[in-house]
Length: 141
Image (cartoon, rainbow, N blue to C red; front, side, top):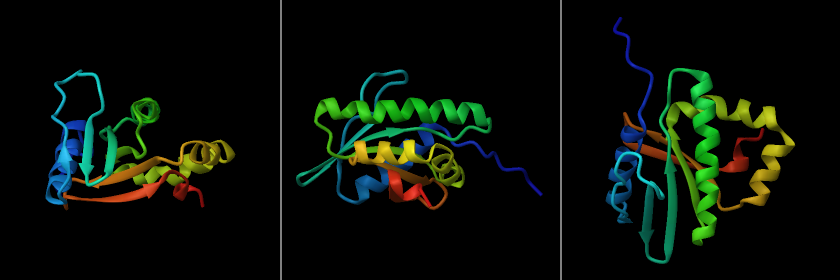
C-alpha cells in the first residue's frame, strides 16, 4: 500500500478553486504573491462578489486549529471592504472535523453564524476538482 500525503497546501486549494470558478464564469482577482496582503480570491459574476480566504490542510492538528482561527478572522475582516459573501475555502478533509468543532463551541458557534450571516465554509476537493458550499451554522447538528 502506498502512503499518500494527507496534507493539502493553500496553493493547491486555491488553484483548484480558481480553476472551478473560472469554468463557472467568474472573473477572478489576480493571485497574490506569497505573503501578500489582501483577499486570496475575489470572484465576481454578474452582481455577485465573493471574498474568499483559503487555507490548506496540515497533518498536525494544532496547526490546523491555528490556521482555522486565522482564516476566520481574515474572512470576516472583508466585511470592512463591503463583502456580502465571505468564504473560508478549505480542503475537503477539513469537513471531517467541522461538526465536532461546531459542537465543541456550541452556542458560541451558532452566535458567530447569526452575527456573520455572510460567512460560509466551502470544502474544496482537489482530487475531483469540485467544491461544496456550506453555511457556517450548517455544521451544528
